[in-house]
Image (tube, rainbow, N blue to C red; front, side):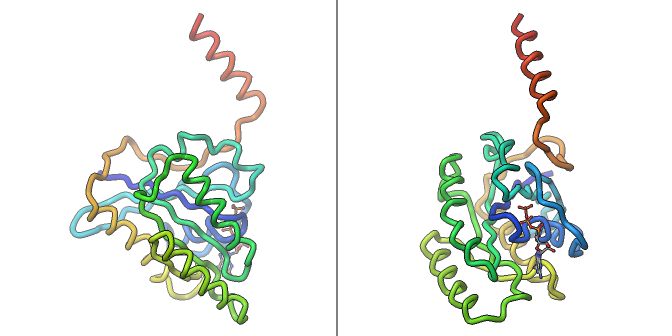
Length: 207
Ligand SMILES: Nc1nc2c(ncn2[C@@H]2O[C@H](COP(=O)(O)OP(=O)(O)OP(=O)(O)O)[C@@H](O)[C@H]2O)c(=O)[nH]1
């Protein structure tokens, strides 16, 4: 089965966990904790008669919890979802930093990407519509589709559309890699003991 790895990036609290949860389970989680490292969620979807496993990598937004986001997390990524919170201008202003992080990890413009403004259920003010206009422009400049949605709202289709459109685009562009066994669960930051053990293993294997 074809696995597609989609990395989800954005500031802490923008709703990356809720969005990926909503897409994979159909529900809005009652309570979320800050993600530490990366959490994995997956859903099998059918695109033009082919079953594809979409594996969503829900990454930590908090810098202190991103220390385990080493190069290899980025290596096999097929697509990127940048998320900001439409009620939080700072999360919008951070987007170039997330884009730069992708660039530094060799994810070029050829890797399909989308921009998502989440929490539209909370957006009432004129300020947020200003950001919407800016977001549209930013998305245009970077040649990516832009969606507004709510991981919490009644319309589940909104969230589905984002990931399904991405899956269709990936399938159409071809060249999907077959990947190994599925991964689920999470990678947490290694403890000091883990690190010590790994160092030891490394030394002993060379001996
Ligand atoms: N009203 C509303 N609240 C949301 C929505 N999405 C997320 N939230 C809330 O926003 C808060 C943060 O959501 P998370 O999904 O944990 O945010 P995150 O981006 O994964 O945060 P980190 O793991 O720290 O990077 C939680 O209290 C959610 O309930 C949404 O669409 N609407």
